[in-house]
Image 1: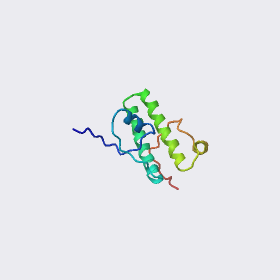
Image 2 (image 1 turned 30 degrees about the vertical axis):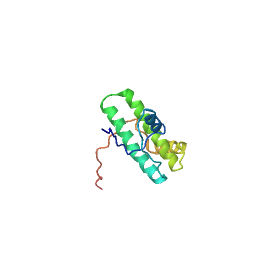
Image 3 (image 1 turned 120 degrees about the vertical axis):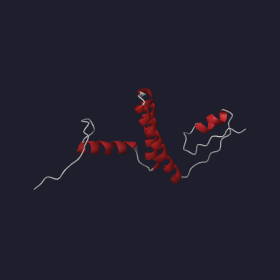
Image 4 (image 1 turned 90 degrees about the vertical axis):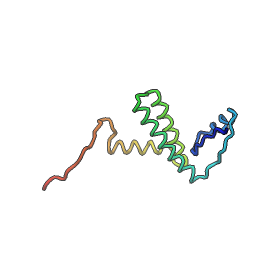
Length: 116
């Protein structure tokens, strides 16, 4: 009986070799640039959800690992569109200087126009 697992997702570079070295047959292909960017975006969602799950279950140790995964995907996503992460950080700092950060923990509930 065949024990087949379907993944259909972007994986890290060494995963194929690890699975093969474990004695399993692997079916994979190399993505073109458009598919690669689309799969990086899917991977970003997956990793962000894992951060949310780690937070929800109070697993702070896992949180660091999951945040590192998000950062890794962000780095590759930026690279895939020829953007340097230093440029991303610079824009983040400019936005923070203009609009502030999240240190004050403000939660905007609603606004209302003032009567003239």
